[in-house]
Length: 210
Image 1 (tube, rainbow, N blue to C red):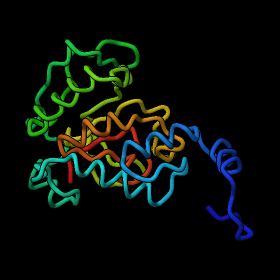
Image 2: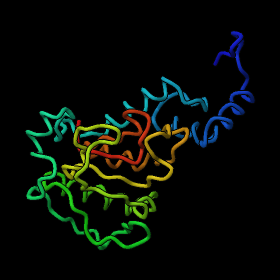
Image 3: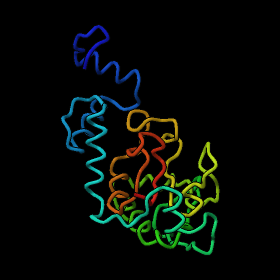
């Protein structure tokens, strides 16, 4: 890593920079880099971003079952946003899903994603980041994208939010957001995109698109 004057920064300086600009420690980034198969140096940059995307894409099904994210593809696959006739309820009463501290018994989602989403939630419930289900923040919600006029994937019941407070739209993942890579992996196994790794922010949001 180069200093502004062109010299190399030593590890102590790098660590201090990381601590000044990030909620994630040098060691946490180091171990995350090892998990995604890139050279661990404690610095999250372009190489780590690329390796993380490759790592998660490699976990996805050989043929991704979900549509592309353009509105035409979404309309063809999911139908009109807000069409509640396309929704079903999945039973999560046996899982640790909670909304605002209250037990959640069922989640409404698009019928095409129901089985897949249920498998992800079961896997999360049985894994080391089961606590994330206690921070459930919604699935179906007939609304536009934040800051825009196009329908959100939530308006089709094909997206879910988890642990929003530390993983919001303006918090960079992984340096300033806390979504566990293990949660992203479980969604990736079903072909779902996590915006934290896909665009580097809004890590609470997962959607069933390519």
